[in-house]
Structure formats: structure tokens, C-alpha cells
Image 1 (cartoon, one colour):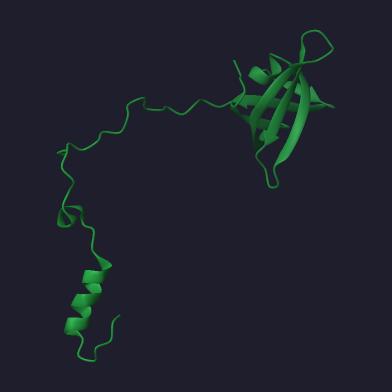
Image 2: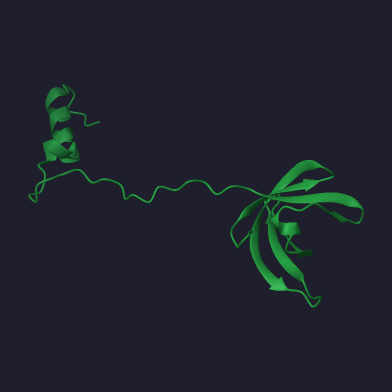
Length: 121
């Protein structure tokens, strides 16, 4: 069943033509019909409202002004529910050499010591 936030592939005249994100639904004044708000992911983006039966936005072919149409629901990507693992560390703050943090003042001092002209880079 298609819900708000789903991505659909819009087929026009039996050809995949665009992707659309479902923005929302409202019941139409005609019983059994819905106003489906879509954001067509085209350049430029387009917002449209189509009045369709539920079966049409769930993958059943239909026509608009004689043109064959199909809204194909795309599968949701798999999302891992596990939280990223944090490395085990002690509760003491890490020393700068352990974290890879370099003091800019120390770096400038080292460069001025090795630079004959006394220039600091």
C-alpha cells in the first residue's frame, strides 16, 4: 500500500518517465476517489495533484485523457537498525599524539626553527 513519503516510478505511455514522491492524500468529493499530492522529481521539480482510485496509486494501470499511465511503487531501501559501534576507549582524555591532532603553534615553531630565512609558512 502506497503511503506518504513513498517514491513511485511514473510510466507514461508504457515508458518510465519520472519519479515522484507521495506528499499526501485527501479524500475527493467522489466516493472511492482520492486526491494524491505528488512531487515529480524532474528538473524543475513539479507539484501535481491527481484524482485517482486507491488501486491506481498502488500499481494498477489507468489512463489519463487516453494516455496509458502506471504508478509503480518502488521498494523501500533496507535500513539497518543497529547503531554505529563506538570504539572502546578509556574515560581519560586522549593525548594529542593519540588522536592525530597537531598543534598549529607547535608546527609553526618547528618550521621557523628549520627555515633559514626565518619565514613562517
